[in-house]
Length: 597
Image (cartoon, rainbow, N blue to C red; front, top):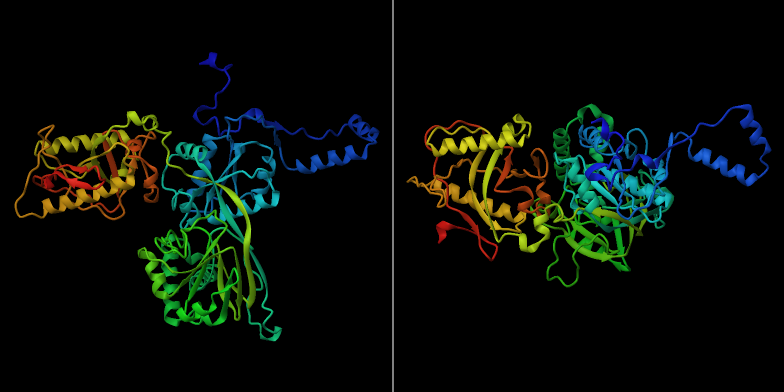
């Protein structure tokens, strides 16, 4: 091993995003000797003194500076982690990134803000940023980038921690971090597509139509003067405001995600009963690009008005929906310079959770909003009760963001269309959360348990729900993604239920092996998810919102593993019911069972 000491380090698989140690130059401590003092006295150039003083001020508190070497192959990554987001997820993520990267490029936002780090790396070419936290963390970093006016502005990717994360969902990063390997996240940031995100100014003034003596109680400015996601007033802001006020008064009562959700539900129900937002339409005036929407708002008696910049809202719902053939409106985009204005009644707010949408009012470039009483408002989730005001919404700029793309580069076969097979025959195995955690996500142990269960079932012995349980066999296209594969697994479940509920037990045979196929008749819960079995040295969960970004070939060779957190571990006696025949994907893309032939 000693003969390798003199060899230069290649920095490994993630060399393109790692800041090389040679870029980090230690700052020399100022010399205090008499000789150095005399040397300083001889300098007569005021300009040189000012420059030196500026450098000392710039490097104050920094033990090092960055001296980058430009290379088109490098995309150095700056990682900001908010440990307070997502419980203890942030702390774990911080440690993992420090292991994979140079610790000098990973920053803890609980220790210091992002400004100093961005200033330090401002001259690094092809720089990319990864914000690990909630949407508020992303907004914080974007505001500092505005302040520093970096040119070109580095694109920002998102590793979502905690709940909500509507901006992360919009950019295909999902609603939260599960247990995806950091190595794969680094590849996704490196290969991600750069897209633009509109950002909007909120300019607030006192309502000129009201005399000062008629102004009600309330703050005179919003918590943020720029929004990236949405700005709203009425019912949703009132519920958010109650939550924030209660948490500030009694922080010990809001120490778990479950309690927080329960409080939100209770606050929403209380507001519904008290109908505190029912008169919103009587106290606002909304003008979009010169068009007065007030008559329509009063006619439909909206209790919530949302100004939407991204498609997602309220933890993943899509309030604009798909206009389809509605010629007055275009599909929602986050980079078109237009903002969507949506009105909600209590009924349409409730329908959001089951795929509904609000009343589309306008798509515009500028909004003038006048309020005539104190009204709850929220800016990207930050609430307040604003005194009567005149609010002007206008486009500020566009930020560069990293959108997670559908990665064909991760699988060489998918880069060559001739190498993609027409059909894949895949066994589907399901795993309980108890076994998944009990085996510590170990792939080999779970596979061994799966094989032993399969063989014991073929031999007609008792089947123990231990490890991975064979569920069925799918035949899908070679370029099938996981979102499509989910439909076929659901169809397989329907066949399982029809077989297990039949009055006469039917045993199906695998035509290639002549063995009966094992199954568990227990139905999958709605919360099941796919497991990646090939990208890392252990299993990890794939967020459902990101299934369209993954191909079956990326996570499987001959078998797919799915995790069902609600699966009941039991030890049924006797011979299990037979497995339904193959679920085959037709050329049209719809699944069909061979029983239908």
